Length: 481
Ligand code: C2O
Ligand code: CU
Ligand code: CU
Image 1 (cartoon, helix red, strand yellow):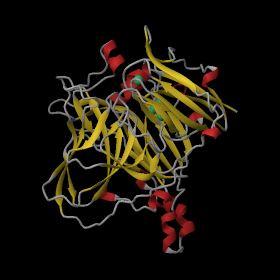
Image 2 (tube, rainbow, N blue to C red; image 1 turned 180 degrees about the vertical axis):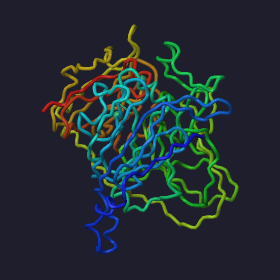
Image 3 (cartoon, rainbow, N blue to C red; image 1 turned 120 degrees about the vertical axis):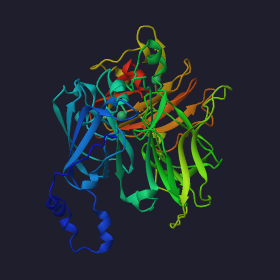
């Protein structure tokens, strides 16, 4: 495997200076090292990755290096994924994105609450060989976010060819829970790819691929092929991203235990919930705890994807395998209360009682759409215009059409207010906590409530099935001052 190494170019002095206010401070102040700034170089370029036997697969990859700040800001990831950025809430980051993929690109920080010029709107796309200098403060609470390109019409292609990485935010509230960490915290990114005979990736080839989304012939986990993961008889924290273009999973444990869900897109839930299964759509993240302490050595436990609807001809398949390999040392009892998640009051919405309805349906000559419209780079209708500092209720209406659309809204995290269930979503989805992507199922009407705070400007909302996003299930919304 062609591993990309990151090089730390900064001297230790920078880090030491940043920490100096704490020199001589009492030990219990040490965990307060938040607000450390850093600068990162991120370059996207094309490279050959040894995925299968024989020829390497030609892909597009992010590689990175820390220019200044803590070395732990970047972690190389296995396989073709970009490095994982790990930082704390209220950190100021400078990120220099160099585009060397031979076509226009721009990075979007999925889930982060950022100003317009930091959010990777396609109108900010840069050409090959240009550099975009990001500089922003991480305002989000602890959670698993991610980054990927967002140029108009090419997002699906570029992500599919390898451009994506994780963005982990930590904060004091999460630290206080002492959740499993180190070897006991696993980041798992699910994707799928279609490999041809020549080991090269096959992307969209037909209108059908666009309408249904591009589904691969191989599951890819953390940028490589899934291997059995050896674990101890301890509790693990699983941080999952569905980074695939189009495939939705429905997760369940093979041994019949419940899924212990502690967080979703926007970080920790208020309380841990136990679910028999959960739907997991492109763009979404899940935070799970799993306790292997009562297992026996050599037991196997699999994370399965079971059929979303039981139509008799789909079978469960394994997406991640654990082998209980070692005795455990650490005792951990799963917490019940996790964090404070304040429900946005319905009365706060300026359009309480009259949600803005966005209809999702396919249109001849365009593809899947929002309200029958194509994407227009500079347009926003009055309905797509909000006032800075206000809260609104939106509704995604899929009552007349039939496939899953993970609807994603840029800017701050939202909450799902209510879901008028179609025939499928009952018992399949979990709508609690802070979300930035919500799976709308055939027949559903999903109402969300969202604050439009801090940042005026033009942002996006779209289906995160990337072939839909590109063709052309995406619209702008404008936050006016
Ligand atoms: Cu992850 Cu606009 O996307
Ligand atoms: Cu996003
Ligand atoms: Cu869609």
